[in-house]
Structures are given as C-alpha cells and as structure tokens.
Image (cartoon, rainbow, N blue to C red; front, side):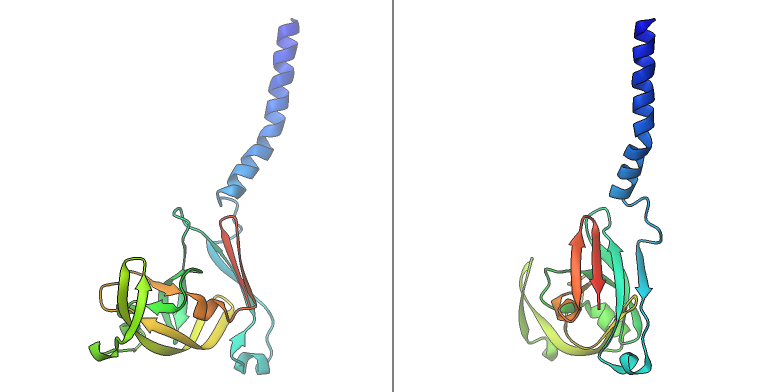
Length: 178
C-alpha cells in the first residue's frame, strides 16, 4: 500500500511538471512561434520618414534546421530569396538574381577581387536602389554580383546590416531593427 501511494505521488509530480517541459521544448525548437518563420511588425511612419533613406521597422527571423536565416527580400522592387549572413562583408547577389532584378553585368565588370569560403574569386560592384525586408527599407546599398553559377542564394551581408539600428542573434532567432 505504501509503495502504491509513493508511486501515485511520483506520477502526480511528473505529470504536473510535464506541461512545463513540453512548452519549453516547443519554444526552444520553434513550434510555438506565433506566426510564420518570417514576419515583420511595421511601426508607424509619416510621409517624411517614408521618403528618407530608411524606413523604421522590426523583423524577427527564425533559423532553419541548419541554423541559416533564409527569407525573401525586395531588391530594387523585385522579390529575391536571400540568406542573411552576418559573416559576409557585403550584400552579394547571385548572377541569376541580378539578372532577375534587371542588372546585366558583362564579363568585363567582374573586376573586384573577393575572398570566399571556396577561395579567391571576382565580383562585379553595383549600387542597389533599395532593399526591403519586412517593414525595413534601406536605400543606396553597396553590393556585388557573383559570377554566373557560383552562388546558389544571394547574401544579405554587412553593407545592408550595418545601416540598421541594430541586429541581434538570440538562440535561433535573428532580430533586425531600424
């Protein structure tokens, strides 16, 4: 009888703690996210702010299973899939994305020497009119174009990120704020 009471007490204790464990597991692994993996909260802007070189906003990105922050951005008004990369010194468009947004670099434009994870290469320098990401907008961003077939996804690097008020990496979330 005593064993039964002890087992019942342990079971009650374990089951009463279970919701906390499940909630903690779900939050840690991104299951309790209130919206899609990428969402923005737009702040109020007035007409003067809308014409400035940046628009205030906040964006929370959730890392994918590999720890990458993939999302869509509007580059010069066109939707482009990007990897937000705090380790990239510049915004780098894939050749294919550059063509998609109306940039057509010639082979003679690839004059900038770059160091990549795969070694040394060349890139073409460009200035982008706008990059919009959620409620965040920046104008006149220095960028580069990678040669055809060398970059699978465009990189949103530091030439964009350094213009923001802040960016913060916390657990598996990246918060961008302007």
